[in-house]
Length: 105
Image 1 (cartoon, rainbow, N blue to C red):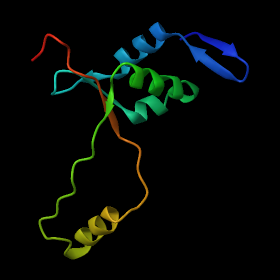
Image 2 (tube, rainbow, N blue to C red; image 1 turned 90 degrees about the horizontal axis):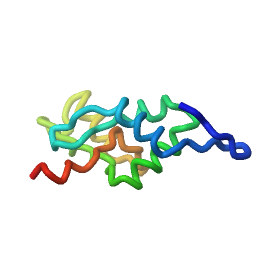
Image 3 (cartoon, rainbow, N blue to C red; image 1 turned 90 degrees about the vertical axis):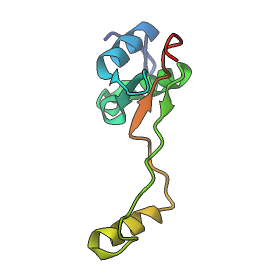
Image 4 (spheres, rainbow, N blue to C red; image 1 turned 180 degrees about the horizontal axis):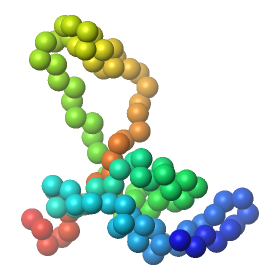
């Protein structure tokens, strides 16, 4: 991928990001595509441009699955899940999902 240097920050062409996203993403059960945040972050300095491109093209952060506990917080692992639910700090989404193609309904 070619980078064009603009001062300290590099700019990446839209078509280069599109190609990169196509390579890093995979099919999602919704009919769209999904890309892992870890794969985006592995691209280093280009990750900011990739995240911006995803937002511009309608990709949505995946909502976290609600925490479930069969034992309602009982036991060693249940206590850990209860502690994690109480976190005030927001976490970055793990995956980004593209909208399903218009022809798929």
